[in-house]
Image (cartoon, rainbow, N blue to C red; front, top):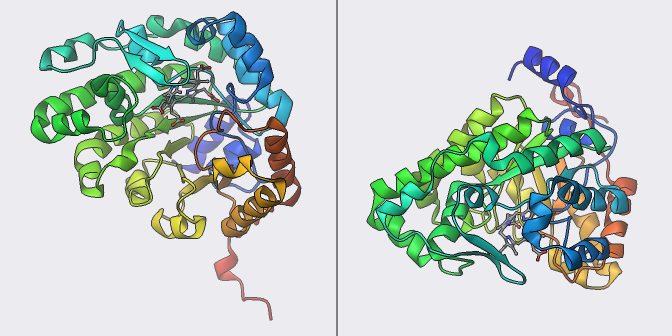
Length: 368
Ligand code: 1CP
């Protein structure tokens, strides 16, 4: 993107001057931005109070409730970004694919995809199909003091739920289709990519400041298979969203060997790094000019504060003041996490994180 394009984008979008958006773009800002995947819901008493009265689906389908749940962690922790309260299966659900979000389990598909004919259950997504999501975005863009991150599931991860029928450990049915019926596989990926792109475009048009593409389970793949069967479809989505002028974060779990590919060719502005990969090693795998998000071990927040504190400092040290580092967990907040610990993490990152503007450094003689 040219400087002129950036200036244009900056003049029209709220929160473009925020530390979070500037970090995504590798521009200097005054403190290390921090937010948490799965910061809304689960660990928060104020979320559980809403869930006692409403099902997960009711919350997602009622813009006032979904907006309230999105705002809760922003109010409580003072994080630098909010993530839309929705789910990666919401768009396919809106197309009539029966998916139930089972408490303590996750998305369970009524009739899993098993034949080529199942592709016809995925027609293109129209904005009206997800008007409740877009209305939630509009409320949030009006009310939030920080940027809103729109999101969607990447085709591979959404396909894994559709094909397996629910959460999986081996992804064997998904991989059987991928290896066994490659043309059908690519047709499925193309349809899901179209749905994902329509969902993200709608969120950006309503004012989301950035997007995150969740390919949570892509780490189950060999890098060569990732590049052949999955990446072209995710790339297509990220390229198209990039043209809308908002930063794109590309995230997956267990993706140590995929980090380079996930950012190749300018497909992403920031790559999410899980806790298994030291940030310094991730830095060597992710192309220069692409930022990093992460990567505190989520389970460490279940231990004593002294350990959490040390690990937060370790992440900040590994990030080494880079302008394009966004502090986050390596994956989502675990439900048993004490919100007071997350509060202390935010405060510590804000107090001790430093951002160095190294632009032009190479041209200057080193000190001493
Ligand atoms: O902060 C937030 O929680 C934001 C809203 C959000 C997001 C971004 C939810 C609410 N889900 C997601 C994305 C999502 N959903 C992902 C990608 C992110 C990730 O890897 O964590 C995935 C894989 C899902 C699928 C899903 N939905 C699961 C995981 C199941 C598995 O395979 O391990 C679960 C448990 C759900 C249900 C769900 N989604 C969201 C919440 C708060 C819940 C729990 C529902 C409840 O309150 O009972």
